Length: 640
Ligand code: PRX
Image (cartoon, rainbow, N blue to C red; front, top):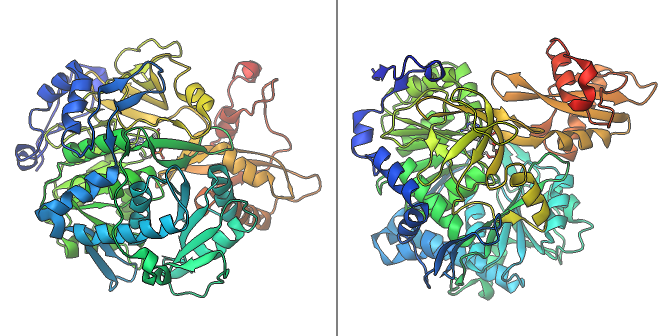
């Protein structure tokens, strides 16, 4: 049994038991004396980050660790030359890791297995890089990647990085309209996609969606198509190219040097939802991002050479970027990637793969844990999960019930649970534990080494322990976003204006008397649905593009499995009947114009939407109505 004990039991704000880490996990961890390291790193954050950065490859050293003269446009490792690929791939080729497996991939049809040593991965990346170069892609150009969870997504991301191009991965579940907006905004000239992806035994037609998305694109000249499902697609004779045919061409062959770049040169943009309808392109750069993702994965998930690491995220999200693709390779680890979903064809697919491939460290999302929990323990128990030594969670709060199930049933009380709080913008974990730290079910943990977090009121004053407030971060960190691509003003106003000198996370949280942070949720118009980040404005603009809709408002309602469900209030054109059929049509319309993950779960059809006098929609009233609660004091409408 896990050892549990109460600490500071007298403090009302620390009312949850600590769970001690299993001695085995703590004793062998890279970080054993976490309190000493915490103190040391906070005493001199820049010194700490500089020391850790030395573990990676730089072709010219930095003269300044952190330049904050133009804050909040912070610059890290100033003057240094590097390329993340030099550390993620190239440096391993001169060591025994050259023949180590970098990637094990299993298809939804699990008889499909592809493995790549670091050497083989290096060759694949060179091939894709040569092809992109031949298409005229160079430093600073944006390549859009719309691929399922297959190895080519890794090759393409690394190939872009290798030649100094900027990748923009769009989750292969977004609709053509969402894709067009992202392609146009980034002015990509090349798009890399596949014929289709496998989703629960059926083909999702990626190429058709791309055709629709780039039909009127003024910038896209080339579309590279990976053969994945073998389904029939239409190929434009000039614009479209099969990847396997390109690979046979002389231009694909031969070495491709990794371009040495300024540490601050951009690595990728990743679109994420904000509080307006227009998604934000978060920009990350080579040097700092590689240091942040490497150090956090290495220390928090205690990566050792013999580990097999599985992060279940899709590469279309930041978790996939940082901890499926870059982090593991920077650590020289063996990463596992699975194409399919956890419940298809049966809800033991993940447990089966853990057993078959000897996964040691497994990182997933609360919504998946809650889903699998509902199918019962028997599905887990029929597999031998004794290879597991660490479990992790990300994306939304891991509620204590799901925590307990993950810990007891999956981890057999042998595996620490590393709950990692972070964001697309932060690039790396910010609040978490390391395996030697005691855990609190439901709390994310403590700020990472070198970071301090605080909970403040509307005026920026710290609130007492145990009181809910706005979560802020005090110190810049290497893998922080550098800006919003082509929108520096929005970067400043969204993250740095509310509390000068502090990073405004947009989350509410409380810190307990022991210094553990409990994340409560977003304070803005972003909702997390099954761990996916959605802007209410995005859902609303999808709805109002339907001919029967005059106006719409979306809110998140608590949901047992998904964390939040999307509830929408829709004002219909006069004379339109709010039927079940119309609801189904609106659901499909949102799926088609935005993404199936944004489909509304429930509807109401008021005659008008409650608003402040200045015209702002009163979401709290809509939420209260949907939950059957008191709508509150409507006389304060203007103050809302
Ligand atoms: O609200 C927090 C929640 O997810 C938001 C960031 O979403 P995104 O940029 O999509 O990145 C998700 C993966 C890093 C945060 O503002 N969130 C993320 N991790 C946690 C979390 N909430 C509670 N606990 C977490 N571990």
